[in-house]
Length: 286
Image (cartoon, rainbow, N blue to C red; front, top):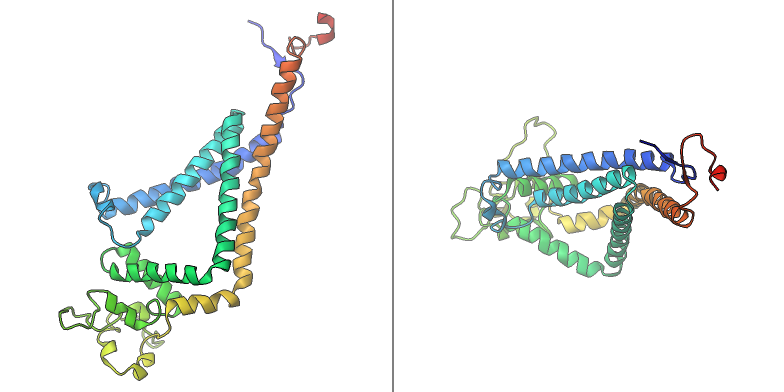
């Protein structure tokens, strides 16, 4: 058996293995996201009864985790295999998807700036929908609690929004112990208390509104986010720049794909001359 080698290889090993190293981390991160998402669903019994997916109310954070995991896993796999196997189709798929994601991010940022009222209305609908489902999903509950505590806010536009939830509603038809209250994440923290009082919001909305701010946050989360953004514009810009720098990884698969195309083109044009035995001078074959 004779082994031949290509004497005019143009594909850089540096590009191949740098791209592989980058994407193996990306791929492993996707595996972690998928694992966490599936574990969370198994804890909630969704995997044993998939019909629960269609019966979910509000937005399940696990769905977002799974979607991110699928995208990262798929792109990482395409990048790794495309680099190692020098597969032009996988590299082109990787490049095209990264470009698509980048322009989608750019479009979302521009549209959010141009249509601020529309974005505000959508966020209000999102928040109110999740308020209604607050006690139905522990992950959703933790998401809202984290948002309210981090921004020191309560409800979408104020504590009254919690009337949308059947447990916190002030109507006479409600017999819940949490009636006319708010979640503990709306409460102003007491520095003297080392243990979180999860009942601090009970009956708070039965008091006069003028006294609410003594025990709970009265600012809505939409207002809190609107005031937070201008104060932290440099942080937001830094995050977008960091994401863009990560997406510059597209340069590597593009360069590798171009090298492979150039190699294939050269091989096609000079096929009689480019293959030879090790140590053999190709010019002596003519």
